[in-house]
Length: 356
Image 1 (cartoon, one colour):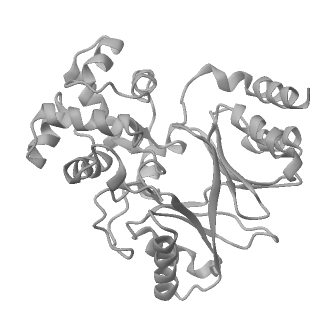
Image 2: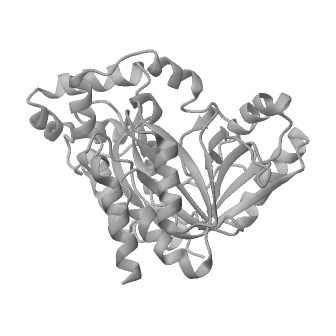
């Protein structure tokens, strides 16, 4: 298994830097200098180490991370049961959709799992039914978030975190509800369009954003703080490539929880540092699991130890861990782009291409 120690340039100082960059990218004209000061590094050293991590494929992107639902988008996790001979076609159809940010094959009879989102004005259930038809799936289950207990991926690059380490969740339902009670302005939307792309690795990365918006850097930072305070923006941060960073064991632990205990158990699981996502989702006769949690660790044993610790503490013994066996798509969800308006044509073209 690939480990951090075998990656070029990723010594202890680089790993410590990546831990900081995942938590929060400073809202400062010279963020790399700020991070360097906290770590005893010069700004030039920080930039060189970021470049090394990029070259190693460990850093996927540095950008603003927004909350999909607070921006007015509807979204859901979707589980499909697809016959093996139709899987290639199904993958092409799903991946062609601009609102699909993650798509995996998992070790379960529901073998294709993806997240899909649509902007305001679209009926997401209709979209999912159309994807079901185009893929030829045997069964499709729509699993929207009923309650958000936690979202926020921070991989333990320094390998110092215990499997049962706990901490406060970065983004929760309370912050989402705060954003949903507010309003996005045209100025906010323009800002989101510019900041959702990968930042340049330069000393003043907010300068190109200011140039694109026709304002100064101070105004950019003020707008970022406003979106952060209002709950639309989760944070600016570095996003890791899990597998390249050595985190090849990413398990979706799903828990069958009595309805009266869902809130208690969900909040407890969300406190685990190795858990990046925790949600309540709907159940079905063939899917009784109401609480979903993503557990990240370099080794399968670490994922399973975390799940066992959760089971011991909660008393919930009916659970499964689904591992992704193939990553078909993983991107940052693009917001406020025109591709959503002709998504069906894209998906239908992908389906037709496979059948030729």
